Amino acid sequence: MSSKLVMTRPSLEFISSFKSSCMQIKSDMQFRSAIKTGFGSRKVCSHSFPMENSIYATSNKGLFRIDSDGIYRLSSIPMYGCAITREHVFMVAQIHKRSMLVRGDLASRELTSMSNPSILYESRANSTNERIHQINIGAGFLWVANTGRNSILKVDLVSGQVLSEIWPFTDEFGEPFICDQNHINSVNAYGDFIVFTAYKAGGRSLVGLIDCDMNVTGFHYKNKGVHDIYIEEGDFYICDTFGDADEESGGSVITRRGCLAGDVFDGAPGYVTRGLVKSGDQIIVGHSHKGVRSKRFKGNGSLLLIRNEKLQSEIKMPFAQTYQLFRSDGLSFDPVPDLSSSAVLGMFRERLDSPVYSASALVRDTL
Image (cartoon, rainbow, N blue to C red):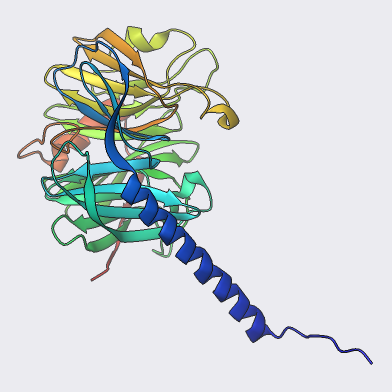
C-alpha cells in the first residue's frame, strides 16, 4: 500500500511565502554587509585632469570621486543614482531583484564613510531596466526616477519619507501604467515644476514638464534613449545617449542652441553620453562603453571635459557604464532662482517643436 503526499494550495502558498521570506532575509544581510564594508577611499589610478573641482560618478562598479590628480573608489556597491546633502547620502542600490533607495548619515561630503543606513523605498526589478534610475535634489526635495513603476517619487530630505508618487503617463481612463512602459530615467525640479525624460514614447524619446497644477506637457525628441535633464537660465542640457543608434556614430548633448560641442561628438565610432555636471565654465560629460548589450560591461567608459564648446581633455574610467555625475555640493548644475515653467516650455517648443502629449499627472500621496 502506498501513499502520496498531496500538496494543497495553502501548502504551496506557505512554501512560496517561506522561500520569499528567506530570500528577503538573505538579500537584507548581503545589503547590510555591502554597506558596512563598501565605503572608504582607495586611489585606483593617477592622472592629470584639468578640473576646477572634484566630481563624483556612479557606475556599474560603484561610486568614484574624480580629482585633478587621480580617481578614488569610494564604494564597491553598484549604484545608479546618488545625491548628497550636508547630513545624508541618498543612493540607489540593487540586490537580487530588489531596487532600493537608501539613505545614510555622512561624516563629511567627501563620502569616505556612511553610517546608519536605512531603506527608504524599494521596488521589484526583474531586470536592470526596471531598477530605480537617476535621483536629483531640486526645490527642497529629492526626486526619484522610479523607472520600474513608470513614476516619479517626491522624498522629504529631512525625514526621508516618500511624500508622493507621480505618474506622468496614464491610460484613457486616467489609470497609471505601473510598469516600465516609457522608461522614465531622469527627473529634476525647479521652483514649482518638474522636468523629466522618458527613454521611449511612440518610437522616440519624450522630454516632459509637469507644472504646479500637475499638468503634463511632453515633447518628442527624434531619437530613443535620452537621459539627464538640467535647466539653466535661457538654456537646457539633455543627453541624446545613443544618437541614431548607428554603429559609426554615437550620442551627443542637446541644448537650446543645438548640440554642445558638436564637433566632439560627430566622429566615429561615437560616444554613449550619460551623466552631466557643470563646474564653473567646464561641462563634464559621461561616456559609457559602446557595444552590444551583452558586452556593455566589458570595456571602459570615460569623462569628457568640455570648455568653450571644445574638448579640453578626456580620461578613461575604471568602469564601463557611467550613470550619474554630481559635485560635492550634491548638485550637477547650479540652481536657477525664479525660473518659470512657461519660459522652459518656450525653450522646449523652440528646440523640440510642438508638444505631442498633454495629460493630468496622477498623484498619490503616500503619507
